[in-house]
Length: 486
Image (cartoon, rainbow, N blue to C red):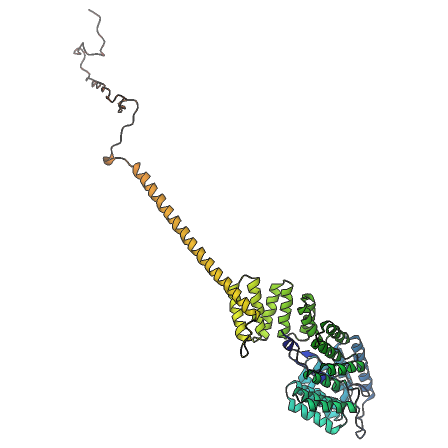
């Protein structure tokens, strides 16, 4: 994906500790409030503070200490913090700061409905709690209700004309609407009221970036880093400027500094993942993409890029699974078809299916804008077509060869059958059932001698005479004994 699509849309100026989601941001409040410091503002001098029980105060202070400890450790246990602030609120329902902090915790866990309800309840208990109004305005803006957000910011400014934060956040709205003059005017007004307002500085940095005034953007960004080196967004903005300047190595360092300030800062993970993909550091890209998906498992672009990192590591089946997941989340993500086609084409020996997906990608990516004729996809498409045609011709040749082989087998079988039939015919007996005599002893036929004259036939043996009565025998008849007596 290119720079414009891979850089997630943020509203980080609207919240100091925002967790960014795919394509947009959620407004996260600055952190649990304390009665005397932190994101919760002090009540105006003309509004008497509510009376809070000592038990509630003690429990609230314990909850705030737990938050501070977890913040230093950079590991939040939100369910545990939620239990502590609920305990404080149960001790005294008038503790608006506890209500507000429960809203912060709910929002950081993605429960915007509960967060809004908590902020509104906090304002009901303590209308001077302008941080709750600001967070509600941020949530309205992130939800696309710009008019509602502006109304809330203006309401805060009417009550607190010197409030720099709401003024700076209102400036961000004008910047997003490309009214840079109004955005800069409000930002400067915020800085006049609070010279350390990094929110106003961020609006100015982005405004300069929008207008491609990189030197001015860098000057303001470096000023912001000096004011608050623990703000990950300021380091991230410096990295964005360095990327625009073409200095990828310095940009990488700036993004890493942002992660040192807050390891779950998603925008910097996004940029580092892309830089790793560009450098073909696929294991490095995988690491950052997994962190992105931990924050937002439904980020289709992150799934697509994780598939790219798997493909680069030769894990093609895993890559295909990530492409499938990306397509489920965003069926209009054209790059899914392209990258899936490449694996089918180059690895899976399935050019037919790849060709279909290439055409689908061209139709989706070219919808309304068209693809350049020099786009690599057209070369891949032609290559796949050549393979498909070659496979089709090879299949036809194989089919023809198979037919010839079958025909030869049939002809051979017919010849063998005819030969067998002839052999059987030659061995058959003569008509009438007579059997030719076999040469040998007895009265069998004799062979014709070499001279050509057949030998004489032997005389037939005399038939035996019937035996006559005694005394009447013929003396000349052989076989009978003669009487020697006189």
